[in-house]
Length: 490
Ligand SMILES: Cc1cc2nc3c(=O)[nH]c(=O)nc-3n(C[C@H](O)[C@H](O)[C@H](O)COP(=O)(O)OP(=O)(O)OC[C@H]3O[C@@H](n4cnc5c(N)ncnc54)[C@H](O)[C@@H]3O)c2cc1C
Image 1 (cartoon, protein in one colour):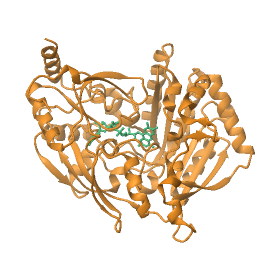
Image 2 (tube, helix red, strand yellow; image 1 turned 135 degrees about the horizontal axis):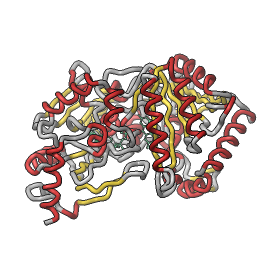
Image 3 (cartoon, helix red, strand yellow; image 1 turned 45 degrees about the horizontal axis):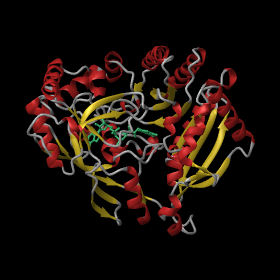
Image 4 (cartoon, protein in one colour; image 1 turned 180 degrees about the horizontal axis):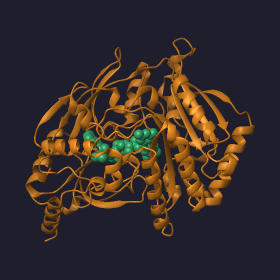
């Protein structure tokens, strides 16, 4: 790796967010060992350039983008370092993906206890964001499954952290802004079948959806709701619930079969006919207000009439990674891409806040095309996004014509969420501003972050587009960056 000169132009790459609504050029490095990351830290300190880590780039916003700086793609540091099939404890490098992880442990009867809605993120990305699953109430966040990790700090230190250390709760959740987590030891969950017992049914409005989610949090291992954000009036907030439970020992008559990888594989075609790779193109004509209204209405009608309250077995993969059924589904939103807006509101205030958000979107002609409801519990990580309440994730199509009105609408949502005592999640954000971030994080937490930043990263080299947008990076670094860029182009 050449780090003893100026940044080489051939490394300049255009990188995008998952939603394809943002892009920036950065100098891309793909190291294979943490020592090379340490060299990059030294290089960045010498030349005043900034560094961002990037896993699979599955964050919806700008968490893994770094305009004009270095982006360290961690995916070649993807070795499994130790696996104990008796205890379910695994140690791995953080470039390993969730897909690699479940494929490694499942045949021995284990499953990652917390996963996001897609299997493509890396473990580093899951730690950086401290992701949650559809079982957040039951199992907590990804960080809560960690027994120990090693991290490399820009100040040159290499540290090991366990849940007894304060730094444990700071390095997990802070989006790689304090250091790079290089390897991690995780506890897997014992499973006695490759299948989950799933129950699916519809609910007529938002109150019923929230009540069903509340019941599910205590009674089931997983609970998630789909909200039809195009329904208005008495049907506002109607949707479909899914709960899922692990099978007890002995319930699956042939666990060796269901734990096999080929039982988990998602099919290549829909109904054995339509290749999944073209499916997003077939969705494109429906990605507009009437199209989504029609699709949602038919989906709700079909699910509420044709055998409502369906109970069936479904593989872990099919249940957890539903969105991976349609490759490149986000491309269906067209060239402008999509914005995801996920807010977290305490349980007492969630109904009124979510109802107002849906109503206002409909009134402006900007309904969310997908709505997802989950139940959460608070956690002690520094950049926590969770509350004792519900989250509501919404997907908005971005077009040249709706950019301004959509931004205005989302900033009004920010106020609704703040007034309800809610929080936001940087993995899903691309519109928050420093004022809103100060309001939901609180000055005390920001002070603590700044103090740790000064200690771990005194030269302020770890920065990202997200960081500069929501926290306002130090101006002197911006100046040094532009100096460095000028040197590159001279
Ligand atoms: C379809 C879809 C469904 C999703 N569902 C969920 C969900 O259910 N729940 C949920 O919580 N999230 C969900 N997400 C969000 C996603 O899980 C997070 O954005 C996650 O961070 C993506 O991982 P990544 O490897 O792509 O990381 P990237 O997006 O590349 O990076 C994320 C952040 O992690 C930092 N980082 C990367 N590696 C390291 C490291 N080694 N040390 C320290 N920091 C590091 C990066 O700098 C960046 O700030 C979903 C995303 C998609 C696209």
